[in-house]
Structure formats: C-alpha cells, structure tokens
Image (cartoon, rainbow, N blue to C red; front, side, top):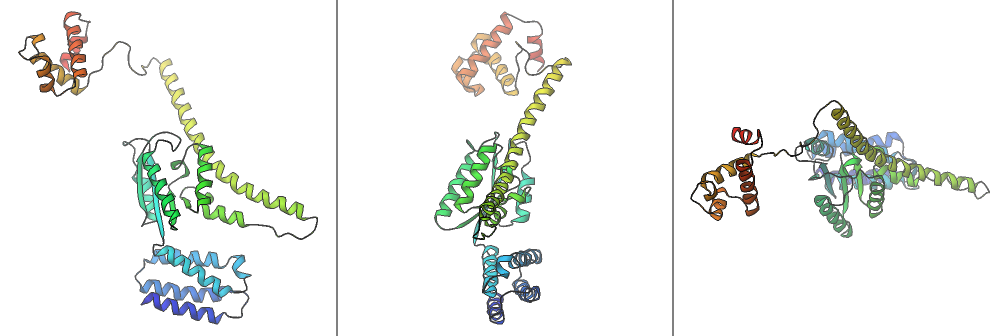
Length: 336
C-alpha cells in the first residue's frame, strides 16, 4: 500500500511540474519528503532511506536534468530507477580475497556488507598478483557474464582495487572489459574509480561551436577522458607497486638477518621431524621385523596408516640412524 501511495504521489508531482523548464530545490525537497515518508511507512531502514533520498537529490540536481524539456518526468524516472536498485533489481556480489587461510578475511566481508547488506559474498584464499588460477574468481566471472547476457544488472564490490588485481595491465584491462559489459564496479577504498564516476567522466563533453575552435575543444574532450582512464590505471599500478615493495622489504630483511648471523631457511643436512613422522617411526621400530618386531613391511604400513613411499623413507632413515649414527641426531629424535 505504501508503494502504491508513492506511485500516485509521483504522478501528482509530474502533473504539478508540467510546463516548467526546470526543477527548483524547493520542488525537489517536497517530492523527496513524500518519497521518504512512503519508504518509512514500508518499514525501510531509516539509514537506507536517508542514503536513497540523498542519491536522488544528487542526480536530480544535475545539469542535464535542470535543462531538460521535461524535468518532472526525468526526476520521476530517477526515483523509479533508484527504487528498482533498492528493492533488489540488481545482483550484487562482494569479492573478498586474502593470500592464506591464516589471514583474516572478515574485515573485507564486513566492509562490503555494511554498504551492500544484500551482497552475495565470495571468499577466496589465493596468493599471486593476477586473476589466473583463482578458481572462485573465475566461477564468479563466468556467473556475471551469464547474468549480463540474460539482461540482469550486476554490481561487483571490492574492499579495494588490489583485491581484484595487483597487476597494473591486467587490472586496467579487466576493469574496462567489465565496464563495457555493463557491470557496475564499486571499490570501497578507491571510490573515485567506481564505474559510475568513470561513466560520468565519459559523458563530460565540451559542446562544439561550429568554428575553428572545435579543434581545440575536441582535444579538451579527449584529454578529460584520458585523465579519467589514467586515474584507474594509477590505482592498479599502486596495487602492483605495493607487492613489489613488500618483496623488496622481505629480501632486504633476509639479507640483514644473514649479515647478523641468523639462520634463514633450513640448515643443510639437518632432518626436520613432524609429529606424524615421529609417531610412524616409533610404530616401525616396535613392529617391523627389521628392528626385532614380528610384522612384515606391508603389515606395518597398515598399522602406521602411512603410504608405501613414506614407510620406506622412514625405515631408511631409522636404519641410517642406527647403523651410521651421526652425533646428536639419534638422541635428538628420541627426545622428540
């Protein structure tokens, strides 16, 4: 009922503005008041209503609308388009990525859901600068392509551009590809490169005059578009630079540690035991015929629940420890 009432209010608003060549802020405030009341009556969250009406006001006060021959109709269209988005007219996906399961992905998830509560979250644990090899991303990309082909509107949300790609060339190409597919991209940390901003930049055109000055004006238009593209590229270049800087700091840190006498990596010739290998060796020592037990190799493999390769590897190491003892090795293994 509340939305039916809103529809009639919008029709009244259109009739009231019939004949006007522009909408005043006073007209807009009156209409937005009716929209706000209708949404609140429908139990829409107040914060969402506030953001919704603010978005309408920002778009409705744009130059194209104010100079329109039918401003009332265009503003109503803006309201209806925003309502479609608010009520779920678009598929929203949030993509979160960290390098390892040990890293916390929750922050990205929380940030996306705070702005887009209805977003479907896709989480991926993958290291690397490019999208190649990311199984979750590739599945999401295929799904997005299917939905776009089916005529659906799709929004892809990232906590930052680096979550999409840390390779400058790939990131920019992927951005443009998705943009021309009609996918709306949102980067919470870099809102200035959201596709809505880029789309508006491509529409900013200086009107031609029909004189020789048009040569200069055309160059200005091309420059404005180039600036918008460069902003996008710079963000992905910065994401790539952060990875390179991290690798450089890690390399320098390892060199410093070595110069200070610290051991980096494994000591050559030293064996490293795991809890599983220690337990398996004890079973082999206790049960194998080779060490005074009563079970065959195959039987010991089953008792220890280890593979053939692992069994003979551990058996070989035990034989070497017993018959070719290296100072400290056998004692250390027993202590473990």
